[in-house]
Length: 435
Image (cartoon, rainbow, N blue to C red; front, side, top):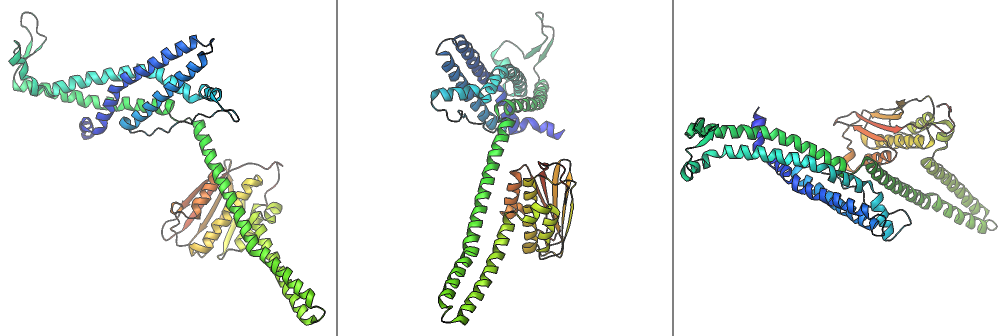
C-alpha cells in the first residue's frame, strides 16, 4: 500500500506520464509522414520518381523511429538496441544499390508499421493522462485557487448538480475544500499505476517494432564469434610459428652446423667427428620430441585414431595431479566438436596443474539432450574468476563461437567445477562408436 501511495511522487511516474502526453503529437507527425508519403509515392510508382520518393519516405520514417528510440531512452528508461545498418548487396554500389537496401530492409517496414499503428495507442494514452492529471491536479490544488471563484465570480463556491433554482450542493467551506483535495489525491494515486501500465505497452512496442530483430541479433553474434575464431586461429598460427622458430628450427640449424663440422674433421680427427655426430644425434632426438609435442598441440593423432576417451586419458597422464577420466558417449561427435572438447579439457587441466594447488581432479564427459557436456573438477584453493581477464575468458569466447557455454563455480577455498557445454553434432559417418 505504501508503494502505491508513493508512486505518484516518483520521478519515474512523471517521466512516463510526460511520455504519454508527448505520444499524440509525435505519433501524429509520424502517422502523417507515413500515410501521405506512402500514398503519394505509391501513386507515382509507375513514374521514374516513384521509387526514389518511396525511398525518401522510408528514410524519413527511419529517422522518426530513431527519434522514438531516443524518446524511449529518455522517458521510459529502456535501452533499445539500434537496428542493423543499411547494407547494399555485395558488389553493388551507388544510389541504386542504396535504394534497394532501403526498400529491402525490414527495419524500414517495421518502422512504418510502428508509425501507422502507434497513433491510435498514442491517442488513448494522451487522453487518459490528460483527463486523469487534469482532474487530479486541479482538485488536489483546489484549496490554493478555489478562493478565486468567490472573489472574482458571482458563484458562492463549487456547485455540484445545481439546477436553475439553486438546488444542489455548494462546496464553499474549508472542510469541503479539503475533501476536494483528497479526491484529487486519490485520482493521482489511481492514475500512477495506469501510467506505469501504459508505459510498459509503449516499451513493448518500441522494442518489438523499432529495436533490433532476433535475426539481426543472431547475425551480429555470428559476426562477433567469427572475429573471435579468426583471432584465435591467428594466435595459434603465431604460437606454432614461434615454437617452430625457437625450437625445432633452431635445433635443426645447430644439427646442420654440427654435421658440417663433423664432415670437415672426419679425416683428420675421427674422434672429434664422432663426438660431433653423437651431439647431432641428441639434437635430432630432441627436435623430434619437440615436433611431436607441437603436433600434439595442433591435433593429436590419438584423438583422431582412438577418440576422446583415450585422448583425454593421455592428457590426464601428463597432469601434475592425479586425474580420473570418465567418458560416457554412445557415439563419437563431429570432429570439430570433439577437437574443441579435447582442447578445452587440456587447457582446464593445465590450469589445474599451474594454479589450483589441488590434490586430485576429475574429468567427466557425457551427452545430454543434444549437447556434449564436459566437466572438470578439482579440490584446489578455488577463486577462479573468468571475468578477471584470465584464460577462462578466452576459453568462454571460443566456446561461444560454436554456440557453446562455459560455467565456472569456484568459491574461495574450493572446490572448483568448470562445466563446458557444446552442441552435439554426429560424425558424417554415423554409427562410429565412441572409444
